[in-house]
Length: 33
Image (cartoon, rainbow, N blue to C red):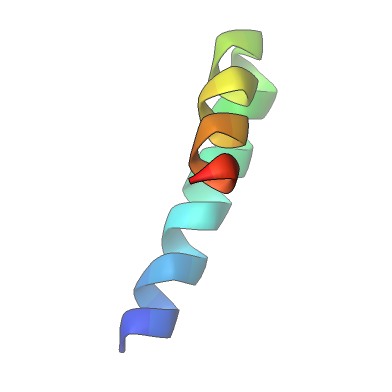
């Protein structure tokens, strides 16, 4: 279930970062974590 949740979040992040360039920075920050 945990893995599924992560995948969902990733998809959401992708869509958000595509709509707003600011989201890309946030996504990268999460990846770094």
